[in-house]
Amino acid sequence: MHAHLKPLYWREPSTLISARELIGTPGFLCGKAFLKYYGIKPNTMRAYFDTYIG
Image (cartoon, rainbow, N blue to C red; front, side, top):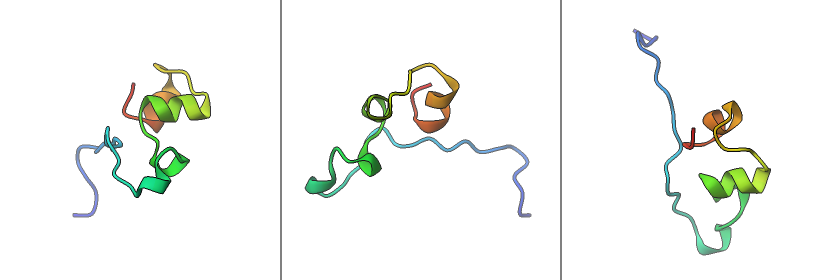
């Protein structure tokens, strides 16, 4: 069976592990740091879909 009967929701991890020189760059920002970097307000649909912060 290729389809899921119940949808799965992906959430980014609260912690991302990276090389030291990549810390603070867009690919390795998560949560509040991601929202602040891109100017996204928390508790909005955009925040819900882009981060683990709903």
